[in-house]
Every structure is written in structure tokens, then in C-alpha cells.
Length: 330
Length: 280
Image (tube, rainbow over the protein chains, first blue to last red):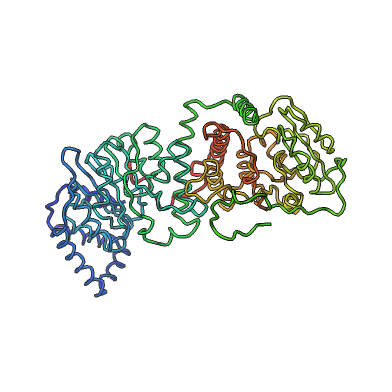
């Protein structure tokens, strides 16, 4: 409990203060290390390996150089300010590179929510001066991270990312651009990457089915479960940031709430997704979690559809009779 | 018996094929008697609506599944000679002037059945006894429900809405191994215990019956593939959209609702490491 409070304080204080001195950040990191205990020991051990340390240092230096070298893709003014929300767990390798791409979008704020990290993700993220870093010591789930980030954000448009994948700014831009021209929920279009249905996984089937039930088969397997996706502030307010914890339900709320939901770009997150224990193989933990999320979404959708008026059992029977008669009148 | 496919895709194979060769009838040594057994072990239930051209062959196939067998034909809304032909083939014919409605014939037939095992098929599917026996065998050796191992066409990225619904229902039932197999497709066989648990009425809404069977812990298995998709008669459709589809989709959604009511809001799936209390 103690840790958590300290963490949220650090999140707020560094928020919106891009000029925060490196000295103070070091001090805070040191304090955190002292609090963290076993995780800190692990990361300390890793740091003591000279190869890893050297690699880390050279990386961050290179980044800073290339960041200034690459062209910025600033979001056109007048279409609202941009908040980028990144949820991550143990992504010290990819986070700095991702942040470098995000910086090219010239966002108003970057919120990085770290949960259950035992590596140097925190230290690496703090090298990005604009980033507001929220540190949750224990594993909380990436959706919870997004929800926390959304709550703290202030921008008119919100771009949600995961820390495990470096996506070029050009590809991120299409989501922001869609949100800028009035799309409330701009989704990643994974359809061209899908295998034949017979070979697809449970997650894809859940997504397809939910969209079908929502009358949006045109969305294919697009879902808020997948990143990147962008939301308008209006969408966030209508959905409620707590609901972002269960992304399929958030999608259902958006569609049934009449928000403009569209596919906005195609980023191959399937190919680049980091394979970990827990997200590989049939029936893995991630698959179970997402199936449960879709179940939750369906509960809500079915309840809504029923209150909006459903056929009674008698009229259903009569309907069946009529259809049978009609079909056989060849 | 599964036919081996020679290649993954054979474009135009339907057009090229002149005759369906998938079914190889096994002629029994002694032709079965064309009467119903007084104390049947297997009841074959055949809903039929204007199926005069096929009904005789359908009944002939059904007769061969077991030596103690009764055939029940539920003739409804038929203007042709379906009932006469069925009677002369020795079937127990239940007549309705009006169409009963999609799958309602199954309930009527099940209520009239006397056998220990109930085998469901359809008046427009000519299936030889050799292709029906595996279902009876599976139930007589312990399964409560023996399904057709048929999931519908799944080669495209985006399946038919009904095919998707069947897969999703099995997923939420925690039975992804069943893929798209369900009580929706015939032929399938059930034992009397299943009939008692589900009640004959529910059989008119096969997805609900299927869901309840799995939820009640009945032993449901897919036993044998009969490719009914290739055998189904072409039906009228309204501008490419089958009006029956909406009924079947509603049945599936109601079945999903039943699963969620019985198994709880996440259908029994966990919440992983998600800590919801962090966000107020």
C-alpha cells in the first residue's frame, strides 16, 4: 500500500514537467530501489553484468542522436492535443525506441504506465524527459495500465500503445489522423493478416463474433484488445476510463453508444508481438483472459439488446413456421 | 470414413464433378424388413417437408442402422406424396397439414420415439446406413450425444455468420475442441438420458439444447464426418440473405446468454493478473 502511494505521487509530480532535473529523478529512483526489495536485487544483479550495462548506455546515446536526426510528424494544429498512453511490463529494450518514435508525433503528453517491472524499464523511460512515468510495483495487467493512463491524460485525442513493440511514427500517425478527423474509436485493422478461419485462434474468433453480434461484421477482427488504437476525448468520457480495463466491453459500449468506430490503419502486431510464457500455444493464459473479456462484453450486449425489446417465445415459433413454409415453396 | 484431400484448394471442383461419389453404400447381407420393430433400440427421426423424391432412400438408409429400429417421419406442410411414400416404406408417419417450423419436427419425433437411442436426420439428406451407424455405435458405447463432425466451411478468413456463431458458442462453453460441431447439424444421435435432461421441446432450438447439454455435464463428442454442406438442397434465399439465418443466429445468441447466466459473467474464464481495484 505504502509503495503504491509513493508511486502515484511520483507519477503526478513528474507529470507535465518536462524540465524535471535528472538529479531529482535519480534520487527518486534510488528511493524506489530501496523500497522495492527482491525486484531491485534482481535488477541490480543484471546491472552488474558489464555487457548489458554497456549495451544499455550505447543504446540510449544512439537514440538521442537519431531522435534529432529523424523528421518529426507533428500532428496538425487545431485538431486537438494528443496524449500518448503506453502500457508496459519489462520492456527496457523496446521502450526507449518506441518513445523516440512517439516523440516524432510531438504529443502534448506521454504517459507511460509500468507495471510489475523487474528490469530497468523505469530508468530507461525516465530518460525521455516528456514522459510521465507511472510505476505500479506489482503486475496489474496491461489493460489496467491503459485505464490508469487514460484517467491521468488531458489531451483531446488519446493514442494507446504497448511497450513491447516499436512502431514507426508514420504508422502511428494514421490512428491519430483518423481521430483528428472525427473518428471516435480508431482501430488497428488486423484482417489482412488473419489465417483461414479454420486455423484461427480463439482470440480472433471471439473478436469476430463480438463484432458480428454488434452488427459490425465490417470491422472484421478489429478490436480495442489490440493496439495501437486511438480514442477521442468524447469517446473516453462516454465509455468511462474504468471500462477500458475490459477492452471488448469498451468496444461494445462505443458501438452501442453510437460512437464512430472505424478501422484506421494496419500495424502487424501479430508478427512483432513478443512471445512470452503465457501468450503462446492454444488455451494460454492470455487467450483465457481475452475470452473472458469477450464473455463480459457479451453479457452487457445481450442485456442491452433484451431491454431494447426482444421477440417473445411465441412470436419466435410463429416466425420459424413462416420461414419454413416460405423456404419450401420452391 | 474421411476422404483424403489431394490438395488444399481445388478450384472448380464442384463444377467438374458430375456425380457425388462420397457415399459408398454398404449393402447388408439381408435387406432389413420394411417395418418398425415393436420394441426398438434405435429411433430414427426424420422431419420431412415436400421430400417425395428422396424420402424412400432416406428411410432405406435409416433402416439399416440397427436390427431393432423404428423410423419416425414427421411430415409437415407437404403438398406432395411424402407421407404416402413414407407409410409404404413402413415408417411411423406423423402428419401436420401446416409447416411446423424449422427444427420443430425434431421435438415432435423425439416425443414419439420409443427407442433407447434417438438418431436425428433429415428428409432431404440421403445417407446410407454405413454413414449413420457410427453415431449409434458411439452412443451405445457410452456417449450421451454423438455429433456430426462437421464444422461448416472454414477455409475463408471470414466465415458464414452461422459457422462463426457455432465456433464462438463452443469456445464460450469451454469446448473449443468441438470447433463448429453442434446439435444444429444432422445426423446426430442422443440417448434417452439426454432426452430426459433436455426435454423434447428444447430440441427445436438446437443451439440451446447443445449449450444446455454441455452445461449439464453430458458427454458430448463429435464422432463422424458426414459432409452435409455438400448434400443440402438449395433453398430460396432473399437477395442472398437467408431469412432463416436470423433465427439461427438468435438461437445461438440465446445459447450464449444461457452459458453466461449459468457460468457467470466471464463464462468461467479467469481475470489473469488484472488488478481492477487500482483504477477508481
